[in-house]
Image (cartoon, helix red, strand yellow):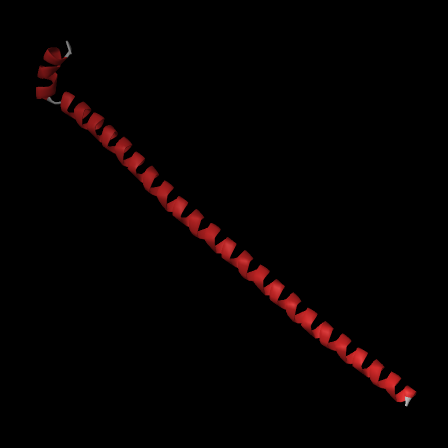
Length: 97
């Protein structure tokens, strides 16, 4: 009877160890899943932020280029007008300004 009890105790210990390993594997899998999801979310947030920053900077650069372009066009127009007969006639009157 004592041998049967010892055998049952050994079988129970083996079953408990197997169950403990299964639970530990499940917990480890959930941790890995959480880390993977968290990392994926962090990367997605950084990509969206970088995209927003890039779009913002592109619009700022475009506005700056437009301002420079309009200034150059005004200078070019003024130069073209100054080379016309009316511009040449008006040059002495504008020279004092």
